[in-house]
Amino acid sequence: MKPAAAGRAFLCSFCLALCSLCCAQVLWRSGDHEWKKLIMVHHWPTTVCMEVGNNCRSPPDYWTIHGLWADKAEECNRSWHFDLNEIKDLLQDMKVYWPDFLHSPSNRSSFWKHEWEKHGTCVAQLEALNSQQKYFGKGLDLYRGLALNSALLKLGIRPSGNYYQISDIKDALASLYGVVPKVQCLLPQQDEEVQALGQIELCFTKDLQLRNCTDPGEPPREPAGGRGRARPAGALWGLEVCEDGPVFYPPPPEGGR
Ligand SMILES: *[C@@H]1O[C@H](CO)[C@@H](O)[C@H](O)[C@H]1NC(C)=O
Ligand SMILES: *[C@@H]1O[C@H](CO)[C@@H](O)[C@H](O)[C@H]1NC(C)=O
Ligand SMILES: *[C@@H]1O[C@H](CO)[C@@H](O)[C@H](O)[C@H]1NC(C)=O
Image (cartoon, rainbow, N blue to C red):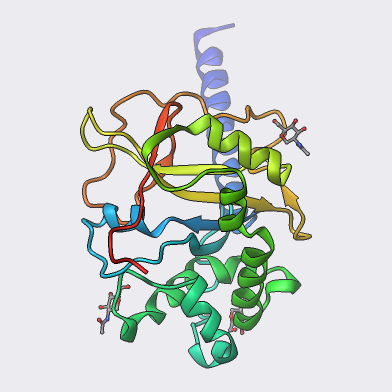
């Protein structure tokens, strides 16, 4: 090849590469709101309170709902605003099982507004969840169906000053529910501290059947993250996949409900 031809060839393939990169980008963008797993997220109030500097008056002493999420999609419809009136008949249960224990009772609906706008508007693609009434109602139904609190008791896993192994908790939940859960922790700020159990996620198909939170072929355990993973300072809801090893399941503070 003459040098000039070689140059053209190079330029051409460079353009081609650039084009396919653009194409991939466009495809990826349009896939923004595509998701395939529905995630029922439970959190342990005592750990969430630790995370924000023990800033709760009396956190519930049971696992509550954080949200019903889609994997890989957030804020799917910014013009679909939260409307407390649509869930009036659910409020009694919402206050107990889906409470905002971080804010004063007068402001607790801002948590539901956040969950609806960030996650609800995405999972509302499913007919079973296509209104606020259905989203919050189905969230409560799934929570009751999973009965995580009694499941943990049945498995002998209770808040304790002694540590559990994270693999024991995951394996026990997997054997009970028949699917692989995802477990998240508040990672220690200092080396001598132990991660605290914060969040338990169970995943569903779009047909609302339980499924593994992992994808086929994916190892059931996350690869070891290694010590000293940085956590953004002061981040709210900054829980991360637990590391293998010991975990603290913190008892609620004295005087809690
Ligand atoms: C977004 O929500 C609004 C209000 O409910 C609705 O009218 C509109 O069709 C929705 N848009 C999409 C793309 O779903
Ligand atoms: C309610 O809580 C949200 C945070 O979830 C906060 O941004 C807002 O300022 C609070 N409103 C009042 C009136 O306290
Ligand atoms: C779920 O995960 C378990 C454990 O890794 C695996 O044996 C099983 O085949 C998985 N199920 C599906 C449907 O992928």
